[in-house]
Length: 371
Image (tube, rainbow, N blue to C red; front, side, top):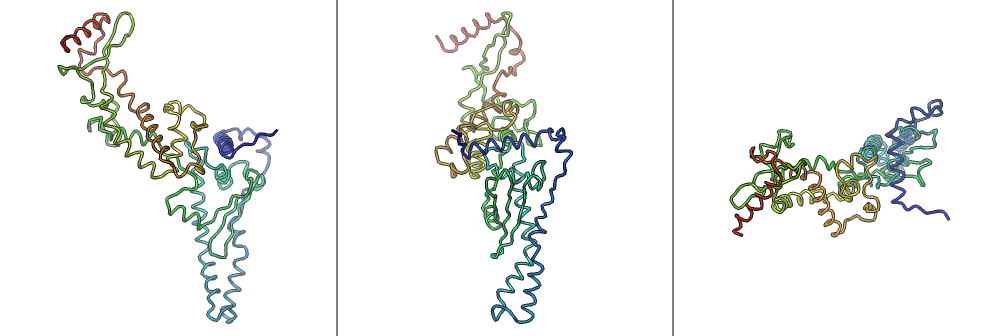
């Protein structure tokens, strides 16, 4: 029995294949491809306007000879206007289509998007294997209602991909994309890091990034009752130890949460991008290093959200997104500033005898708490 592949799995499978093909240099070593000729001249505009000159001339002649369908030549004048405006409509339409489809060629493209858009981009941009010779074609049609339709066809399309100019324009006017763009999470979280109020303004560089020597402000470092720093002692081997700073994690979380919530609210105002961020980065709580090491960004796997089924996002998914976004920020961007941080007091940063230090720390605790 042949296993049926659902559309979501098919999108991932084909998008990943296309990404690998386009990022590979293998085509340079394919002798059969190099030895054959490929026709990438789709002649989209030439085909679309092949008969318009004759039509335009015949309508003009009808108006001149008073042979219009109506007494005021309304229909004929309308068609003349449409034909005169059509070339600019075509240019704008095809520019918008290419701009939307080019999202598929970005490094963090979400492979859960409809794969047909990636195929269409490969055809429009002349990628190897997507020529007329390979069976692909692009047709542009001028419709009676003054709209235009572009049709992509070829072997990887189960059925033709059809886009209408007015539908696309209305979608773009509504701030919706044909292909979901994945936010630059790294850039956004580095910016967020400078805004959460944990660092002094002197640690923020002119370019908006943190200084390499930035440290979390002293108010978020744990202290003893007497106001001295409360250190954690770590074993560095050989019976020796050293102090590292302890941080008030509850205080830090309370400080950053409102900023994270505001960031998430902004992301959720563009739900397509939130879904892309979830699928590529957020859902699996991977580290930045793990994301970078992956051949393809398809982290969500079975936890991926579907653009077709999960939009608009339900309230429970919005809450889950906020929780996972905070987790990703804390683990990947904030953790480095609260892990193994050496004391700022020079004498407290020296290596010491581990057993003596533990005994002294225990005694200090007893003394501070009157035990």
